[in-house]
Length: 191
Image 1 (cartoon, rainbow, N blue to C red):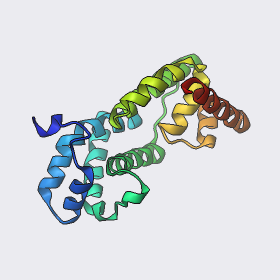
Image 2: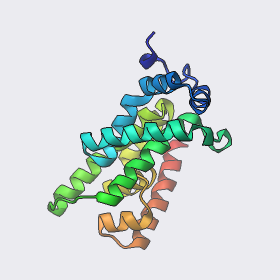
Image 3: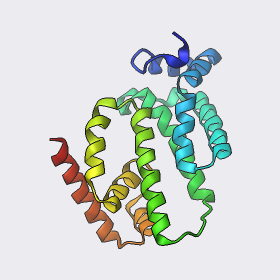
């Protein structure tokens, strides 16, 4: 079995990060072989630019290499930490240099809904949530598109409530209410 085809449960992310912290370059190569393509997919969904995504994944790998010793297992999984490094760099790139192209409201809503749902599917794959994604996917699809987008923007894209309100051109209180009601509907659907 090749390194890149190892399942998530067989690959020891914590040991690999510890080896990176100890200066083992081969450990970083193993980590990249295991996660590079998925990291690129997640980052590309956020920045929507292949070349920029490749640069961000490179920077993420450098950060993972140099900051591996700062990983704290009590705060979450090693794999989750790796993805948060890449995701945070991608979100920073979007916030720092976001270019907007003007489109009509209907096109923007359709693109937003599609991109958010695709991002959800990428995240579900990236974190190996096959079981829970299988349960939550149909529940997400039952939500009204605007409410589903609020949930996906908040929990997949990492946007604040204020950013979501601006993006959807909706009052902040309305966005907060949509998120609260949507979370309740998701809990009920998954019960």
